[in-house]
Length: 466
Image 1 (cartoon, helix red, strand yellow):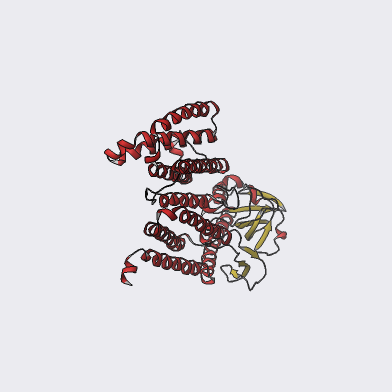
Image 2 (cartoon, one colour; image 1 turned 135 degrees about the vertical axis):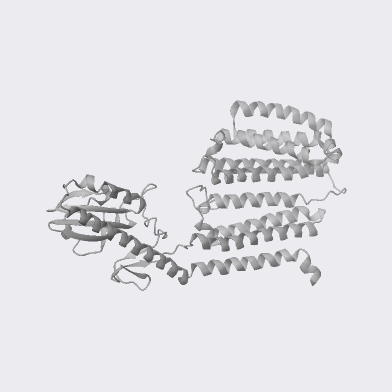
């Protein structure tokens, strides 16, 4: 038993433990207790903003009632306009049902203070506001605090959302009546204002999202490590193809379950897993999912490199041609995915603006690298596996002819798939021609050459698809 635990199964046990840790911690941060903490933070922020609004109203009232006030409202209260941006708060002054001052255009809808009718919560054409009114002789001073925007027509530029200072998910709703499904929000005088009803979306404060995400990442790493070690221990050459095929099916089903069941749900609270950065189809709904796919492709390439050479092949020539055709198809599929990534991303793949690189650009480049290097790893292993059966002279002549043709076509036409085929032929050519160098020297400069070659062609592909 101790021998098993010290071996590869320690990674499987670690995977299960970290997966359970992720599930437990995620459930803890999504239960009603967490919603209550969010509500209390919201109400505390609301009270602080309400006190600030009342203090500003008192200041306006004091200025208006001053003996030396010259009735120049715009000059006297111009500093209030900054609160519209910082606190999403505004003020208007009404005299004889005529609006004579407003700090921002979004607070210019009310000209008759009787419309308020003592209501603290007001639904305006652009949102839901908490208001407060003070009267000085025939002048009404009204303060507005945005709770949530509310637009009749919504698009990519206009959408309903809570004021940013509250940090509330956009699918939380407001009911002006008491609701058993929500939390009663009160003002500073303990008067009921509205009910805040949690939506179906999971909400995580910034600090609490880290722990479950870390558990899931570690579980993913330990699962892949266990599979790799299992492949390394159990692999036998005559069953190699079936084991790799089984591995591919297992990984696909695992990924499909992640997409179909939205598990872990915490992923979709990260911007990386939201469709506004990238979305293509059911299996590639976000940039984060595309990153997972590229990691799994790279992992399959690593597992493929576990292949051991054996000498009892039959009809090696046919096998070599079949395997090289299959790896060429894999290269072309990787090219298709890269083209898909570039054309469906909302961010740009800058090649000449290093200072404009963002995290999402880096992730995009990482995805491209994972796809191309996974193809290279398998290609590299196939050629070395069959090197003793390859007729070098004939192979090199054919490669040189094809490389000349496809290089010419690539730079004339600039097609992604032509670049991919050219890359495949060049890698095939240099693996064979540099094989003796690889055997006599350290493999680092040998592999560095291919890294540079793949990087160069990835830049060509990016430039072609911009």
